[in-house]
Image (tube, rainbow, N blue to C red; front, side, top):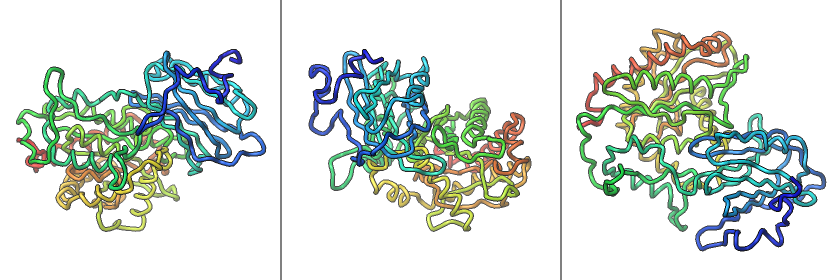
Length: 455
């Protein structure tokens, strides 16, 4: 690799000027992370991980100290170049080459080399133009310092296109999108840069549907009830881990996929997964996805954990605007809300007002409807598993804060309990959980047909 001009070309002067992206007003292809003092000796790479997905590909370098990184993009062909200061070539960083899979939607290959003393250069050969986000994360949980490279498509692909053919004017969509993308004192910026959703789309050949703050027309009588299923955690965030090494993120995805098949088999229902593979989705993006597909119900699926392995049972949660129902509830809500810190979000680009406004918009009606559906689901789950509490519990879960969608969080069992961990690993028990949730959801809509928000 030493003969690659991308690797040996110094940063000063840069790569040939005609190829290099130029700074433009309002944006820049060169992003600098906060300057970190240069260390006397090279840092150690602890692990290299990749998380390819249709929405974006994430590359993570875990190391024993925080480093400075610079990145820029090149055209003809598309490449992303990342220079990491304070590193020497070793086996760990070289292993990144083998981590790139042929089916990665964004990365074709990667080349790694010592660009100059104390600087390692990564060159990603890309399959399409990307809008990269490069940021560092401080130690949290079992992770040390992480350098995160998120590769988003420059032209956003909308995975929700098929579900948006029945798009209607939405009085809240414009308000929420504006809040997510604008700061009252700054020029418009994304709430989570690079992680914003594409604008609503309409079927080919039809004029775009304008978003206007006026009453939403009724939905077509033949529109199926749409349920957003949210498998918790994913990617860098494994969630809780059982004694046998079972990761919560894997179990809840399997349960969600089984539940989706059951829902899709119903004549009047369809399901949408906020993630369908092992990758990380920020909490606010999960909520935005549910709203973008105009979901009638949002179900976040998790597996509980506690410091004592004796804790057991299933539970169902709804949002609380005024505090948690117990100290354990506060602990659990904090654990789940920390997913963004563990999974890795570029917090520096967050709009601090978004979370507050979303909470303020979480109306009592939404919470009441959430308690209704949660009660039905809890009763059905109680038929197949012991309940941790025989009533709906409430706490300030960020993922339940869609202002106009009944939303519940299901803790299917305690993965920290060896007996329940063993049950969660079995396809038969996963299917029982999925069937119980579907039964509760059907009872809810049968008793409250108006809450399906249909014409």
